[in-house]
Length: 294
Image (cartoon, rainbow, N blue to C red):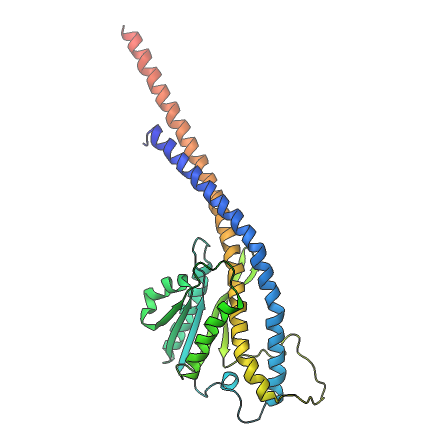
């Protein structure tokens, strides 16, 4: 049985931990508001970009000489997986859920005889994936020390992806991230970047109703500018969704940790009181027994 001093030290230690988890929960709640606003503000732009690309792709359907970013290389032998996670831990199963989805995709592709390359964006995904797929990881892009992610940060990743594609290093690129739903819900997503995955009937798309639009410049020239921009836009959206999901997951995890610490303090305090009472009773018995002996 632990001594009273050990129990007192244990209670003090858990109380200190509880203060830390409570403070982290409050910080995550404050950061969540800003991150959620940024993620929600980026969604309409990304959706509208999909709509524009959808209309342009429809206009060019059946024509030769399409952009490789739109139609691909005609092969799917080499796959690049871009795994976006968080820079820090203590956010529940947020990073693990993204890595699990990416890991399942890797195993599926390897089972089909495809070559797989992994590009990790920030380090937590790298830390988990290297245990099983160290040989497949080609690089890790870190944003350590950056408090607020910007479009330039996303363009850094986008330029790396485009340069690899132009060099013929892969045929298909897929982006992995977590879409923010609520504080307690973050959904891991896999989005194909190259060839461009245009959803059918993209939200906000214009119903031409048989009308013929004349584009200036030509549709192919517009796509040549928009497709590289779309890659960066989708990566930026993924980074913002990840930032909001990370803070939501951390807020939820720290709330659970705070409540667990409270329950542990209650149990330790009860054990301390019982041990103290037993020690007092023992001392009283010894005193009474000694008095009777005299």
